[in-house]
Length: 127
Image 1 (spheres, rainbow, N blue to C red):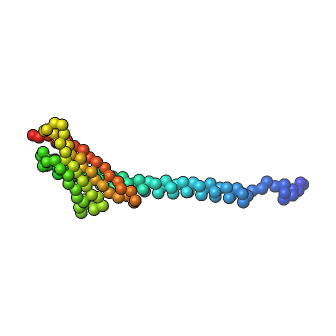
Image 2: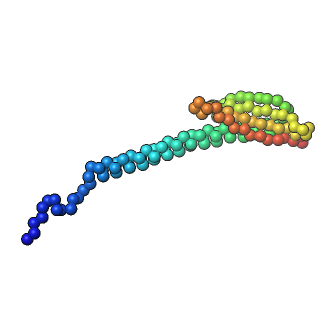
Image 3: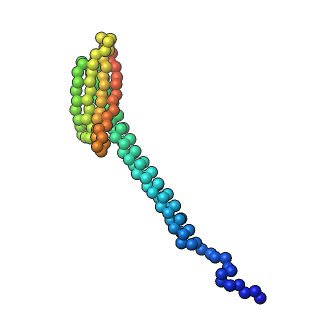
């Protein structure tokens, strides 16, 4: 009969170093995942703001279009109850062609410390 010493047996289990390396890798993956989640949440909020600004700009442009052939001038206001964190400006100007007017609607909002804006431009012809 052959007797084996305890040191001859194959060691089973993980060493402390192997466990520490595995935990470090998992921690790095978790941090990367959380950063990606935070970034996607921020981008979602930004896209909602841009969509709301676009809706307000289209609403203001539709109001100008309903006037027919708007007179040149500037106007501004807030987003009202539907768009409380936005304000708008529009400028109607003449062009080289007397029967064409250019309308620019600009919507502004604050995003953190940044002032954001978007513009919508249309041309109106005398009918």
